[in-house]
Picture (cartoon, helix red, strand yellow):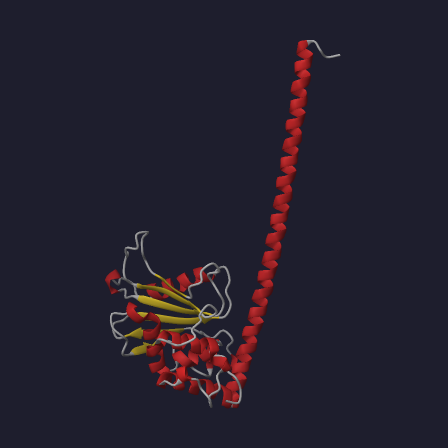
Length: 283
């Protein structure tokens, strides 16, 4: 390839898994990510918001996730997230709920609701104190008994993923998204020698070798860099304001404690003076 292409950039991610000519990759990816969660491997899906390369020319707010429906009506949403922020888990749940509830039109029965599966690839660590890279969030009580089996939210943190040797298709996809920018299409490693991975590399090559697509990729990457920079600066400002608030709160707490100690001391002096006065020992 003429240029290195990062499959984590959202327009590349959507071209890989959201294009009609890569529908088999989407099916393979969902089967790999959900594995035993599905009653049977998917055989076909309908893309609900297919990738259109023209949408990336001028529209910086293009929809970057992938939505699909299988032959049983089950829904799937796939998204990649380059930077984490405190409200991201709420956004995940909101997106899942939005897709789930949109199934019903006015007057439709709740029985028509179908399972909805949301899969998130995360470039940064979301769960700082957990070494596991794969988490599945479903509707369970404290005894792990299900309220309803209607899908859930799956998170996969690429930064935590480590695999010296690829052992299954889920690991193959995760390694591709984590290390794909470093791959050389003329000397692919052994773990990339499958039909799906070779097809995925063809999509990366298109972004690399076609000047129009590469310029579009660069423009999108620059836009994402700007957004990440803005988000980073906002987070730094938020932390600075939070630190300032904590410092003021600490100062107020200290002043309050000092005032209370002084008032207690004055009260004690008054009590002792009163005792001396009442005992007739006051000079």
